[in-house]
Length: 234
Ligand code: NDP
Image 1 (tube, rainbow, N blue to C red):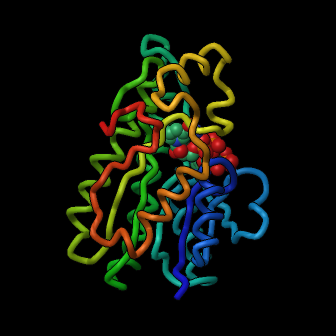
Image 2 (image 1 turned 60 degrees about the vertical axis):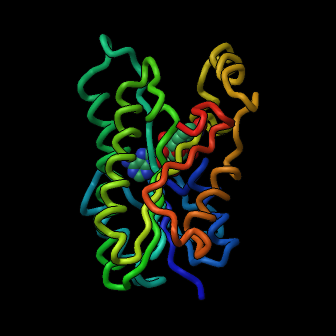
């Protein structure tokens, strides 16, 4: 039976690959998009995850089309990199508001239906830098580390309802986010990765597909690195 899946930030990059992978697995997939057009062939709902009312409206649209969300992938995220001494409070708090509080907003809204159904899957997209730290990314790393504590707390709260909550920590993946980095930095990164390359969006998507599947029913509160060995399993 097909399930209802919602992927935030599913209009491009990792989120789009996850959405397509879940659709291939047979789920009814909705994606949130913020700018531009919804991706072809997927049900798109316009939503800025920093706006609680917009999150609620997006869930209502998905529920009307497909029924309650059974698989939630909190993927939407931003970076605003800067050294601490130069980082504005606005750049710190807006990254936290999108990456961490955004996940809180969508998870809170999704668990309502999951608790009623006594089942569900939540996957939070964190990052290797949440656990390793990264100079110039204190805001981003804090938000991604926050997702680990957040997700593990939810895993404890929701386990008795048969809802699993897992965290995927990608390393450097070929997307717009990494393409923006200077060439020199890209070469440095590849040198530090034991597998010597960037990951692909498909490699993240397949991990999320597994965690959201029946085969992963006994996995919860886990941080799964998909990083070419950069974090050595953390
Ligand atoms: P992209 O920058 O390519 O895409 C980010 C997505 O998030 C877009 O769909 C964007 O929508 C959406 N988004 C951003 N802010 C908001 C918001 N306020 N409300 C709703 N949607 C929003 O990122 P990636 O695909 O590279 O990254 C996806 C996730 O994976 C992020 O959480 C990122 O931190 C994480 N990650 C990425 C890595 C990488 O190497 N690329 C490594 C580790 C983690 P819009 O198109 O409208 O801007």
